[in-house]
Image (tube, rainbow, N blue to C red):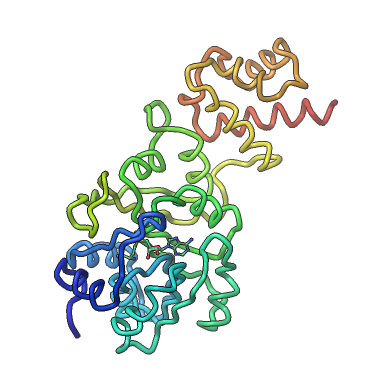
Length: 291
Ligand code: SAM
């Protein structure tokens, strides 16, 4: 089986199948076997694992995953890649490629239909950059039965997702992802290993789904509204951001609610941990319920 994770092989396949990298679809193909191996070993695959991949491209990650897992289901939006995938994946009988959009795929039923699997599965992907954040949020909010995510994203997004309170990268995305998963920054990937070369470096992160969120909130939608509100105007103090977000609560009352939750109203959103956001959510929830 020829090595396809090399620049010459990627170029050869593209020319053979008349492919052009479609920037609009975030097509930057990985051409480095060492990075492919590092991604796969980060997923700690076991022989009965089912893997979902988003965006197989030319199949470099797909076939490395198939070598270690029971079954791989991979969703590709660009139908023009399908003939090339047929060639690169021809020696595997445990891969199913679906032509579809990851933004509207029901992954649980796909895995059930194609792999006969109801158990948690793993997601491995070099994600298309143009939809990274909405895609990750969709995968988390829909509560698909994914136990572990090993995903390559832009380095800056990886830093934001894994950031801790206090830093400039910490924001609504960090809180949302860390509410559902334990997020770890694994390693940086230089832009030089892709064809075509993107403008920025990437990084691989590991998200392990939590059995339950680390904090209790009375209403998740409200929790995320509080978080978005707190980060809405980054330089503003919390009191101002939240008073602007919840205009049914007076500024004076919001101040009391924050103080009652043990939080200095002059703090800024980027200094708050998940527990503190949960505390504010509970206070605002109580206030709204009291009318
Ligand atoms: N996995 C390949 C690799 O590592 O070389 C390709 C990764 S490339 C960064 C992203 C892939 O996602 C492309 O193959 C692209 O066509 C595909 N893609 C883009 N948008 C998609 C979507 N909405 N649903 C599924 N696949 C998508």
